[in-house]
Image (cartoon, rainbow, N blue to C red; front, side, top):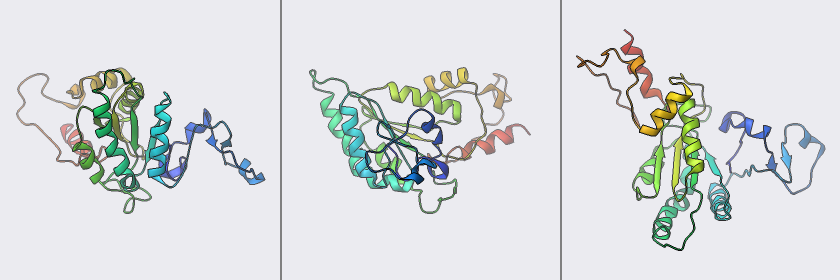
Length: 232
């Protein structure tokens, strides 16, 4: 599920169309062949109405399948009422022994508050994570992967999980890549870690610890400063 444009600058998920197309059961026109990416059996559902997409996704998950909703930050606020009421209902459902597991509801947020992308000043709102963080930790999870390898590891974990509302914040521009795939899996499994290549203490007691004061969803900008300063 994706609001606005799945491809190009809005969400940059164009590679999805290499494996599936956009679901379309209506009339086709000749110009649709030029980048329309339409097919009756497509698995991409796109609409500029996030509360509708949220409802579609919940219904889709209840059929036993897996999926995620990709959204830009400010627009995701329109689906807060839906996505944040889900944890309350699922928390109660998880207490019922006869209820079958349901694939997790995954939200991929592709705009952050500090990175002014092509739509930065109109599509960013850090308040979404504040609302999610206030929900029950037994149901909600927030992931802020530091690089693309960690994003792959997090996405794999979230798509395999059940009975959670997972929120992943990963913005669109190219970033510095810090970890190998194996190291990324280890880092994400632990949830926190020390990166020896970015440290100079060599397991001794450090003279100074450098830390960035960063927003919870700054898209990685808070890591660049300390990493660069540690090299001086």
